[in-house]
Length: 266
Image (tube, rainbow, N blue to C red):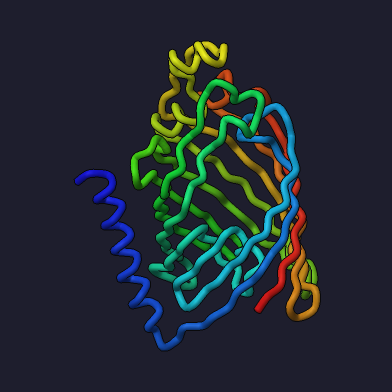
């Protein structure tokens, strides 16, 4: 089956199951509109920092959800599925989900350090994920994401562990750590340098393989402000690993990030 046919089949499967999920008698609608300011590196491994302001939204109807990054403000604190998401299974201990989202790739113009490398193509990604709540307030998550249209994005996996701390009735602290690994196609697109790119950019040729990408530790504070508003303060530290750390494109192996957001619930 060609990649495009596989992607169409996955989209069709997601649509069919979504219709069935929406037909559940126990369905419930909720949503959020958010606005956040983020400070972090221009790309993963970049030398320079930048600041961005991002509006977001989150809509959920039963097991079906649509999100552009506003899921942190939702009433129910499930792991957010970016793009179109479907919760395949939910129990007290285990969640299984399927997601479909747009990947904007990476623009050469987004950083001076990327000049001559060309753009990483936009594509559609499919994600299969699961969460295991193995102890009170603890959860372990695993996600596998693939480039459905085979446009150079390859595939990568993320493993994370998180712990929630209820400080007061309106304040909740979450601490966590995650590790990410990429396949050879993904690593080549985002951390490799071909012979042609070497001529244009001046970087040495670099051919990474399947490897760990980075390790992150983070903490977020979520505050309920009245009945319809919620605020977020997040701080994270990222450390590059494996072939990603050795890439000539990685100008900073350790970086920090800050996220401040506000959301309106409906």
